[in-house]
Image (cartoon, rainbow, N blue to C red):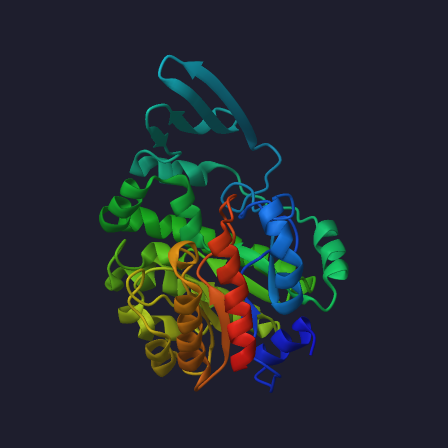
Length: 364
């Protein structure tokens, strides 16, 4: 089978020739990861990886400012050198309305977010909304070039990821606890805009699968389980329902300790979950997820950090455990918790990438 056929049949619940292997290497240049085609150490192993793994390509479309593509919303970037370092400033402006973000780099880095007070959350909604104009040209060109080498997908930020992107970490958590009414108003509006954006893609038959990020910001240890549904779960269900009604697939990307959230995750109704992390990074084994979630496509659960310091023998054991737990009673993609984000690829990392592939193919 080709990679495209293998993945398509897996999501459709049909028989396949082997467990798919997805190392999150992008088929095309991705802003999320290192430029692997221009780094010699990656380039040496890239042909082997692309030949022997299965790619879900997550194409990133611009979603503007809070899903708004209004032509009068302006972005400005400026930077200045100070005695203590460099200060970069981003300003989003509509007429007399403005929000700014500063990054101060010196002995330590300090980030001052767009949203500094609860009132700023509502100020973000005062910016006018117009649906984003979507340019399909690069996607369609890539789709043709990719051919049978994998499944074309869409990288989709959810409503909560929009809130997280304009807050700093501490304020984000405080707002979730203390500003529930304001946060709800914001998230409900982001859901409305997100559904407009997704519906346009679906009606234009763009992508086979939607990679939805943002749920992890409402998981332990960041936030408790009793806040998950109102911050993420209820919105995600509506997004996944829309995607599935159009015959497409929804994959939820959610780091964190999800074991206590499994019943809530199941009620969302997604098709696949990534990366299902065991201890110490997470708290959920693949077998535990399978027991509660049923026959969704579990995707994981090798840790990106382990590539740096684990031996080939240890890596092989991780692969065997993942395949046994993940593929025993349902659909499974062997995958890593993160893609090639480091610009440095050590010899051990390269060996472990190869080990993952060779071990998995022997067991499939």
